[in-house]
Amino acid sequence: MAALTADSETAVVVTDGELSHPGPTILYVNGAFERMTGYPSSELVGQTPRLLQGEKTSLATRRTLARALRDGKRLKVALINYRKSGEAYRCEVEVFPILNSDGVLVNAVALEREIRRRPGRRSTMREA
Ligand SMILES: Cc1cc2nc3c(=O)[nH]c(=O)nc-3n(C[C@H](O)[C@H](O)[C@H](O)COP(=O)(O)O)c2cc1C
Image 1 (tube, rainbow, N blue to C red):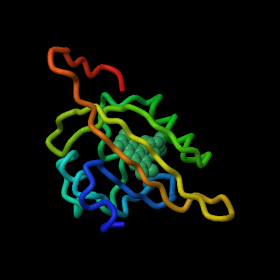
Image 2 (cartoon, protein in one colour):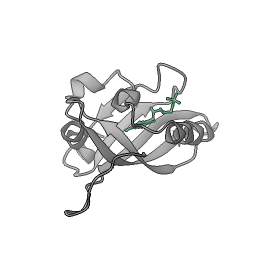
Image 3 (spheres, rainbow, N blue to C red):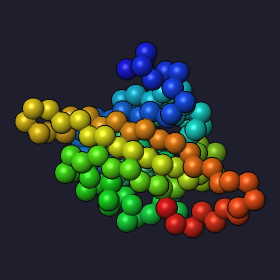
Image 4 (tube, rainbow, N blue to C red):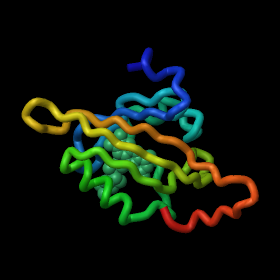
């Protein structure tokens, strides 16, 4: 995993398949994920991706994510995450559930990309 994604420009995060609180638990993040979020890997592993959420993170999007994970479906959403510094950023998150042969969720992988506004366009950051 580390060899595959360490140099990737895309932020990668891998969790276990435990969906009920306090899960899912982060097992691995790559360097791009550390740079985007401002958290070192040591502060993310063992935590939940919910630590990136804040007041502007849409509840509806969270529910959509929870449903897709529960159903074992792949999903791409745009949402608002927060860096360690507290700065909000718009992020495209594509979550891939990994099911075992019994259809049980064992891991989830997300590819995340910050969505930067084109110059000249005002950022509103209102909805996720
Ligand atoms: C691999 C993976 C990456 C995730 N990344 C994010 C993220 O960057 N931002 C976010 O708000 N939620 C993210 N989530 C979703 C939350 O962990 C959680 O599933 C979501 O908030 C819905 O569950 P809840 O309603 O129990 O909070 C991610 C989930 C997984 C499995």
